[in-house]
Image 1 (cartoon, one colour):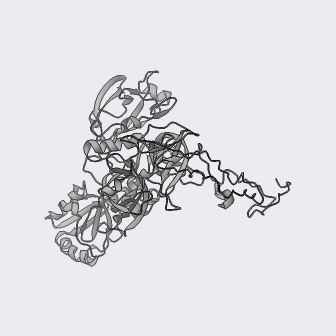
Image 2: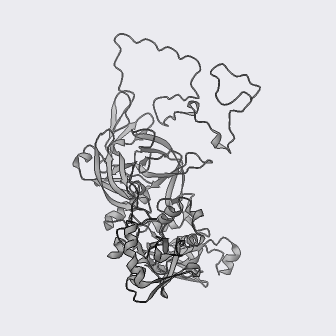
Image 3: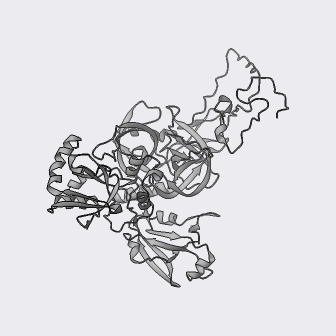
Length: 579
């Protein structure tokens, strides 16, 4: 390329004649953001030819021919929603029926354009709890995201869009009015929230979105929302790149998800993803930001959305997605299968551990081989058939159930096939991934601040890289510990508010409380009750690593009010512990 003569025109800014214009694929960070790199992406079924910057001819543009004095009236420009004017000037609209919105059909491309009037902008004021100082809340902040109208005078958006909300408003497309919204339900695990608006004016002229089926690979999708970069509605298009069990970052769960190559930016959260028929096939909720990845966005598919909606309609509340309370191991090694007594034609996964608090702990045991779930055979790698030519993790079958449903499980135990019928429940962890909007619990005695450990608490203490910065013991419990009783909590000394009574204990931070006066501490409420009702001379706290804290009981209780007044703390315990 260094030998080639440079054509006439504007001198390039960055590359020199001796440098290649292409950057190596292993270093995408070398790309330069400039007008020459911006390309208008044409619609796959648009009747108007759009010229990209790569195909624009060089030189001065040609002069347009003069129009006659009395030109014929031109047809109106094409409109995307609620109906689209085609090239002959005729507006074609397709009614959505009782459950769908108005759709427009482009007869040239045979593509249905979704009614974007059902897509709304969501404004939220958040007031997050301060998990490090649990008697306080952080400074409030505002955010904006997207949502869309569904049947029943309801609006769907993402759960993280209204997390710790103080006030929620929604605004329709083309409107200058923000309407107060009421949060009906928040599904943290699936990252979906349901809103409603009491003002009848909001619902005038708005048709609900209709849901479509789970798309296939390479199916076209259009993401509509209100991302950063402008105030008006935005439309990006792409295709379905992958369908598998994804990690939902907000809910710390794994559910079915779609990967698409359409741009999903901040503000797109909660916006619908439409297929070519104009039906909603998902909700945009997260994207992958990495130097080696481009245009990787994720969408919550319709099976997960319908599960959330039906769960709310059935129970008038969100009950969550059930989970099989086991940890399992793949059985791909032939020696392992033979040692476990499996025949050549048998396939399944080995149970490593069973959650002691789960209903299946009464029937399933460690080293059982799970052969099938609800009649669907499980492969040695833990997958099950999923549509034609695809496989997916068998946890997908579990996530299709509701809390309280029963399922049939076939296991192999000591070369004998056993069949069990178990009741599914939602999963609880020793260190929960979220507090479901509730403020943190705390208890203070003699300047010692006791609280419970959760992922938001670890994030507050150690930042977003808490998985690397937090103490190893806490991380081990986060990843591997199981509840031994339904009400068990991990109680720690969060910090010590310095006072004369706690001299020498100031450096105790985030240390687990094991026992009080020889009695195990099962949860924070139990600890507060034992301290308040203690008649012994001393309070002896047994901490991890064989560390102990000893305080004189009467002196500790007498010094607490002054310590609270010094630090402007309203109460020695949180409201939930007083109940």
